[in-house]
Amino acid sequence: MLKKVTYFILLTLFFGCEEKTAKKTITDDFIYKKPVTEEIVRPINVTFLEKETDSIKKYYEILGNFEIWYNKTNRQDLINEIKLSYREGLLPEDYHYKKIKALEESRNQLSDEDIIRYDILLTRTFEKLANHLHAGKLNPKKLYSDWDLEKKEIALSQKLENAIKENKVASLFKNLKPQDEIYRKIKKSLLVLETYPDYKFGKISLQNKIVVNDSTDVIIDIKKRLAYWNDYQNRDSIITNVYDSLTVEAVKKFQKRHNLSADGVVGFGTIKALNYSKNERREQIIANLERWKWFPNDFGETYLLVNLPEYKLSFVSNKDTITTERIIIGKASRKTPILTSKLTNFVFNPTWTVPPTILKEDLTPAASKSRSYFEKNRITIYNKKGEVISAEDWLPENARSYRYVQRPGSDNSLGLVKFNFSNRHSVYLHDTNNRGNFARENRAMSSGCVRVENPLRLAKKIMKKEDDDWTIEKIDTIVAQKNSKLIPIKNDVKVHLLYWTNTLDKNQLIFYDDCYNLDKEVFNKLRN
Image 1 (cartoon, rainbow, N blue to C red):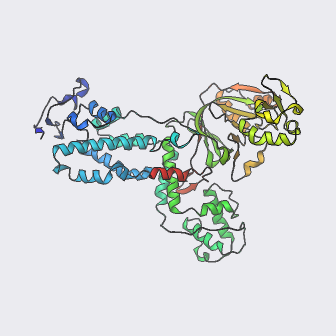
Image 2: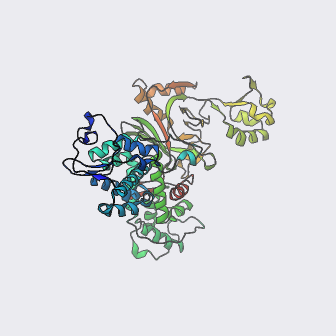
Image 3: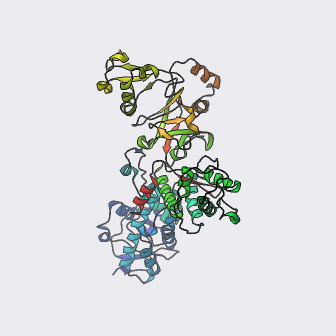
């Protein structure tokens, strides 16, 4: 049993003026009371820490090997954070909530040794929860081969020391979480979702698209689903099977919230979104909360932010969105990677070197059928020596030994401008010679790179930030010359290609199509 004394004024290594006193490690069997507050603080004998990790030992060492959670406010802040961890997409029981709650309620009856063991449990739980709130429970590098996000590390020992001494554990947890407004909206969307009643709907099947004034019994099921999500208000006519104008307006509202073409036509995309249950949406939101913990804490002062499922790019500077552009991303079989990089240069009137995947799956089969493919697509063939090879001398069986370059021009696959940034996947942002696809609902259709609807407008906005001398007329002149020209980027413009499938707008739930089918996998791994 530890020996108890009333006061020990020389506890300056841990309390009050500890900053002015050299730190020591307490190794004897005394319990001390903190002056003024009279809080009992127990020293931790090293035998209690023998089986703990180095990081746990470090927390105690930096605080002089004393009990860390002696202060009730600090304990309550930690316990409250565990209790409310579900709001961050986590499970309180993963952090021993019931056990800790019971120990806290009976703490006054615990022996000194049990209080020390309880303290160590709190410290272990603090570390686990803090890391999960800051960097996520899962490691994306272990889930995906095409996610190039640096694992977020944090030095917790100094932060914990300051929080314990200043009784600011709640503030520490607040600062560990993602600070971006989008994360806060996703987090709030989980609370908004819980305001909807629990109700089990069957799946709606659709044979043909439904347009205004159509009559079919499936309309009744659609109306019920729209009413559930508060998009349909005319409940008096909910049992009629006519697709009337009021229902069309409700569908448009629903479509807009789900990033669909708000045309009022009920197609397969609309039915797919309608078939999501409340529980499936909950799982989706939780998956998004986890993913946002993987993303960088700081996007930079000036950056390009791409959300792949939203098919949208935003150019942001000093927290002001300068412009947004619709984009086309990689198809499911050739996904656009998730990464963070830095814009290095523009290339106006770029040439296009055919990448290996397109060479294998597109060029070689097409050119094998007709050598006119090369002239039609203005592609020059080079051998390993850099010599030009004629289409007639090209050998399909040696297709991989050649280099294929498409000449500049408005019909070039990269269009009139290309945005380069360092990455191992050889992807970039670029213009396109086929702009009609930007009107499509599902725009996951490229070979991995990101096509931008108005790339020259985007380039002009970035160049204007780069240097006032870059006028629109100057850029137009470069493009008109039809010669390839590389313009280096001097300033720090970050590039973030990210993935999230929901947000919130004025308390309205917003969802995007999970185009790469990642949500379910993330949720399942979180709960296993």
